[in-house]
Structure formats: structure tokens, C-alpha cells
Length: 375
Image 1 (cartoon, rainbow, N blue to C red):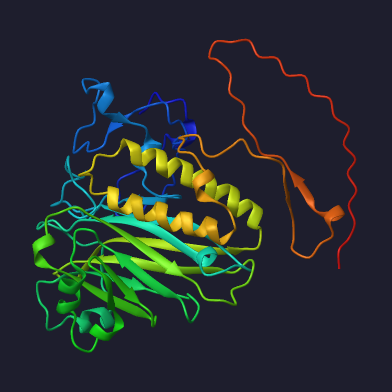
Image 2: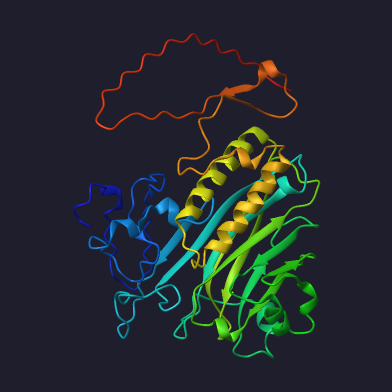
């Protein structure tokens, strides 16, 4: 670590009674689908030099969603009776010195039909028996389960999602009727069974509590949240909601946040959706039939295909590819309602050429730029 060519991330953290805060940053290069790094299930291993190359996957193939951002915290507690460092193998659930927040940024369309206003985000959770806490649950959540000791749960804070939003939670490893049966009577009407593994919340309040059957404890589970926004949302609006993992000890051990940004730039949304569909369909070919993420991936593909159909785009025209659905034609974009001559011309494309080859590009262009105030 001390020899890395990145002086801004080489920082000492002094030990003392006062709180010390330092910020570190890193860029994860996940857009190299031809570079395989990790197996599908690495476990606690950190060295994969002896792994069969056929079993390795690119980082892009291992990220089963569209956008993922991570904010992490390492907390060194100044306590003479506590270890200075987290133990090897510690996770967010087993160490009070580690915490993180997963942030997802998702686009929704307006104007548009119901499919174009649908967004989704996958997530993962696990509740080991030796879990420690990263935060106390809100009193309203503790009150909801005071009669159900020993029950783990997912808690959804709907934030400022607009009235009329419908939320679906898909858990392939959990029977929806079993989860619904665990809900206290006063809270059960919040959810209804949509299919064997999907529950729907059609009347969002401040918070919704979704118990998990004891049978799934000690298992890593995959899930998918789908938000169907109502008509009337406007370009530029941003909505946020939070999901939390809640333990039988009435504590929080994990959380993620979804931010939805409304956009009227349908051309840009179509390009992104086609790229995502191509990549997801390619990644699906790399998954085994028993991979617990496969049902999530299949539903993501189905919902994304419906969204493209909502934009009058045939999803069948998108071929599976780790590079996306390009090459892309020039896109005219800008603020809705402006004349064609005042819109911004953006070029997006791609080029492929052999490695170790000489490349010479000669570009000749005449560009005239004229700007004016727009009232």
C-alpha cells in the first residue's frame, strides 16, 4: 500500500482520543469485459492465481445491476480493551468498525407510459448469527415488531416517492405468503402477494416492514426492488428511498439508497437502456442455471425489455454483447420544446482495432457555434 503511485490516498490516521476523519477515493474500472478477475463465488479468498481461468469473470459480469456506488467507512474505536484493527474475515454484519451505504442512481422518463416510468434495483443481504449492529432502528419499526421477537426483516423507508408509486419486492428464495404471514395484523394490509416470490406495496406510507422467515437465516439472499412511478412526475425531479436490513436483535446491519432522477431526454434513455439490455443478456449466458442471481437477472431483462417497448423500441433488435448495443448514431438532445436548430448535437460512438497496431486518425471538421439567451 505504501508503494502505490497514488500519493493522495496514502494518508496516516493518528491514534488518539479525538475523532479523526480522512477521505479516500478510488476508481473501479469495471468496463473491461474481456479482463477476468474473480470467480462467481470468491468466498473469503483474495488470491485467484491458481483458479481455472475458465471460472473467472470480469467485474462487469459480476455486477448484476445497472449502476452501483459505494460509500464505505472504517472506524477504529479508541478502546484499550478492544482490538485496533478488524479481524480477518470480518464483514459489515460481524464488525462494528465497518459500515457502508450502497447508492443506486436510476433514470425514469417523463413524459412516458407506465413502462418508461418503471425503475428497478437489485440488492443482497445476509444475517449471520454473530451479527453486530451498525445502528439502532427507528422507534416506529421497533414498535411494529415488539411482539415478534427473533424475526429478521427488510425495512423500506419510502422517502419522498410521489403519491401513487407502486413498489414490488422480489425475493426468489422466499415464499411471499410465508413473509406476509409473519407481519403483525396491523401491518399486513400494506403488502399483497403478487406471485409466489413477489410482494407489492401499492399504498406507500412512511415505512413498510417485511419480515423474513427464520428458515432463510444464515443464507445470502438476492432481491429486486421495482418502483413504478405515477403520471405527473416532471423532468429534473429526484426521488429517494432507503432499504435497511433489520436483525432479530432490532438493529440495522445493512442499508442501500435508491435515487430516481426524472428525465425528458428519451433519446439518451433509449441509448442507455439498449446498452444495459445487451450487457445483461450477455452476462446471463455466463450464469449457471443454479446461480441465485439468475432469477434476478431474468426479471431485470424482462422489465428492461418492457421499458424499451414503452419507448417504441424492439428489444429483440438488441443482441447480447459485453460492449453494449452500439455503435450509436449522433443524438440530438436538449431541453424539451426548443427548436431543432437550437438543440445540442452530441456524438457517441465506438471503434475497435487490433492490439499492438499502429493507429492514425485524421479528422477534418468545420465547426460554427452560435449561442443566444433563451427566455
